[in-house]
Length: 324
Image 1 (cartoon, rainbow, N blue to C red):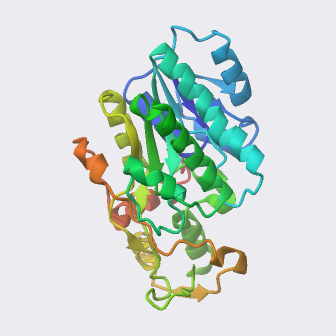
Image 2: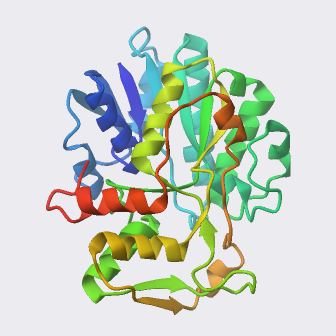
């Protein structure tokens, strides 16, 4: 049995679907209150799977119900809202829950990988290197990023980082993100704006070194990211915390241009004021340092933004059935 937590969410559902395509027929989707919500559509095409609520799963796991049955846990479940301010909730949901799963997997010799986040890097004042000795210097800009960093620090301090595999996801976009509302990628938000209004809105820049729309992110297509996660599973000698982006930052203007091209629409961008509450925690530049990742020999190629958007728009967003 393979466990995918957050399996009704964005990345988890794409990962589970890919496992199906690779021939895996015994999947347990673990999530929190997904039934009857928009997230339930994400698991509609996943075959040979059962479902378990997250709280029930960890209790059953620790109670011995799954002993001897699990071959891998891909932990994608978390509260991913960067505007969530309840630190106790984030600690329970993102930090302590992950610790419980990691401890069980190490004890039982089960492969464990988990989703960390580029939000751990804060404003990037210390760069975006995933070298272990730099983690104590990091200062996330929000409680979500801190909850992710807290687990990474625990894994490093306890020695667990040598026994499990974590991935710091950068700006992920692609099919099955539709339920995420304000936390959807700007690719999806921009697609809807262009389709409805013929144009797209981007934030103005408040730093002279970045033109409006010239702020940069490391955008990674979810399908490519999942291939990398699965490669590490098949090559389990590689343990630790790894960045997972493309290693090449691109601008919001590049993103908009990719959408206009894929949708065959004329370029029309409006630059708008950034809300005051975001200005002090806004990242103007993120780019994954992929040195440690590439040293593993992982051969998975990453599409640039234009190619990823083209597949996302033409294969999914312009179709009646937009789910992977």
